[in-house]
Image (cartoon, rainbow, N blue to C red; front, side):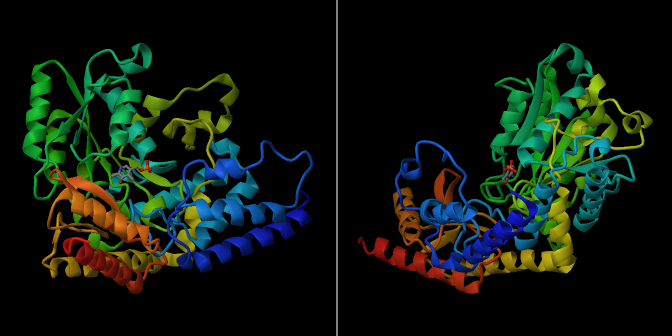
Length: 474
Ligand SMILES: *Cc1c(COP(=O)(O)O)cnc(C)c1O
């Protein structure tokens, strides 16, 4: 493909994406086809001779888009949002076009330095502790996901807890990670990969009303482990749990970590984005105790997957834990100690120029534009919660500090399962569910950039109508 051919095909692809976005609201949110429909429609192998891009675009329309879950759909209220946006796509396109591999400072100086500066900007924007800045002892890096951030934090924590011995001899003792019963599954995965073993994670009890970690239960667990000769290595506290957006009390948890020298990682994968608004930073109280922190701009901050922002308070400890320097990567800049080599801040060696999409997003929206996006989601969710609260048929199941509302019909689990199935079968909305205090609970997460009051109203009408039908026994 010559640059001129690329220009023509590229215009067609951009047009195709713009058309997709402008017609999204008219599509069903999810596919109704059975498993295997896409695979069965594809040919047995690739074409012998090249085809024009238009042929691929035609197949996207007939084969792919009808069989997707449309995450950018204005009626998408499932899971957590996974935003993308025009500037994010364009920044990613530039990254793809440059094809830079930024493993070392020397393999793309701007790739590294732009990322460092943007993560400092973001740290300011979120009001993170001063020591997480690159100008202090810490610094930020883009990981592919919050799961990777938690893995890296776990490896650094084991490095610290073992006095560095794990690098030479592997995990030589029993080390333990702690999170609440509501902690994300990636914490257990990180513990498995980090060699902590199947019993490596202790799930600490939560307050039944708030679903937030109980500091007293954490202390009891830590002290019991110490008495049994197990080394407490890391506490992963969550700001905005996946199930209900519960906020673990960082001041109390941080004080326990400080007392016992335990590494504290704060997982704010979804809710961290809200901290761009000063009035939504309450969950960050106590963050000065944290050794590391992460959130996903790819969830609620208009930046397409993959983009997790991860900061540490002490980059020296991180680099010491992860660095391996083979001869073929040696270079003068690295030897000088004056540069950041991000390969030492992550599990893989190679890395894309992901800072570009973040840069495009920050510059296109500006701070106030990002705040407006977050505030709109929070306000729409609050309005929805008001309608639930005002309707005797329904109940709110947990606090809603961000833009997720957890609610249920007063009644049994089967009725709530049927309710969810009915509203999703409309094709107009997608809600998902969780279990809170053992009971089936519906989740409505606002956050898609196209969602407006009308879409939330429609979701409520669908729920209210289905509730009528179900309670009338139809
Ligand atoms: C979504 C989520 C994760 C995982 O995010 P990825 O970036 O997909 O790995 C981790 N923790 C919490 C609290 C989450 O909500």
